[in-house]
Image (cartoon, rainbow, N blue to C red; front, side, top):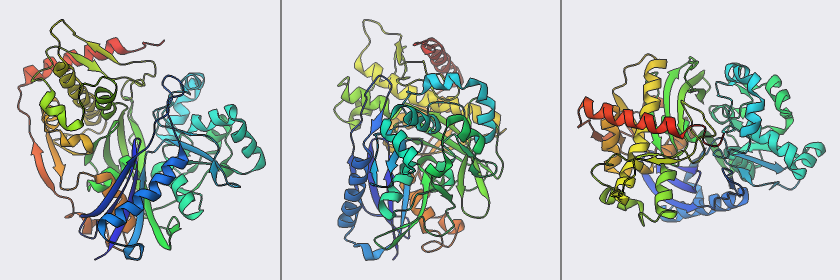
Length: 483
């Protein structure tokens, strides 16, 4: 039996899972890390804490599996994508806290760059938004004396979390195409750092990692084990859901929701706020994807638990939710709205409150908000890619809520399919890392993660239409709140 260790470094925690060659979990370990909010709508992480937790979870996964390092064939990495780390190659230490993908500190700068909107989208497939890494780099160069000095000294390294972990594990400053395509300075057509975009933001290419394919030599070595591959978290979930063919799509329910549609070797240029991105590069030509992002879904459930004390544990959600929201609409725009509105100034709002509104109504409205935001993305994808989508493959922690999955099937009028392995982000990273030495090719993966549960619609079109109409009214009222 061969084993792959998969590191899943997410927004709220780090998890390491060991998979065997049948795609089954052998052992795992997870540790949450601290969230820093130095200013409203700013979010930071401590890169050293993430690295420490990565080491601890790897060792914990080995201990829980009863294996040792000599039995691991390959290591895979998947990560929160747009989160940026700046470190000094002379000390191997971070220069500042990591700026998290959710952080909106560069929103004003995005407005100043509006004249370049079409240029950035044409070259990168991305909307010009504070979500991505490029303006985070520029902000650090302008606002951190330590980062500016390291740039002058020629010792500055910028990287997304995958690049940071690979550097700490192996000393190599590298990344791969799916993560590079989220930086706002990587040309997804000719697949190289774009000189013109770098110039606009004042970034030196020498400070960026080398972009490698997942079919090239290992990205590095840790304890003499090859780091066989890496993928950004959403691309890894697409891979783990076995969406290898154009037209296949998945939705991941995490801190935010992310819907990806495989578009094959074609870049679909969205006109409605979706993103064109690189899914993966296995050395046989790039596979592209169309993506929609929802910033706050699981984070809204965490808000119910930690800030509002409506629940003590996520397992209580289904039991405590009302059968109906009773007219309550919750738009959880805590850090603005992503596709299709891309409004950094939107803020969270709750409508329809009355004297009889209960905690259960608001819990139900929170679950519905997750399904509504996902449906917004699915509707756009059907139109952009001219597809009739009948099945949604889902993964992530929120899929443990049967009520949410049932609501999603009703709202989207679609079958919702849950695979055998719900941790498909980690599984996808394991699959891509093990290609060639554990699994021969993608065809050999297709039987390893079958659907084990499916939810189908239970409400009529009239009820569905009313729910969607109320949601749209709520969203319109949440826009431009801080303008």
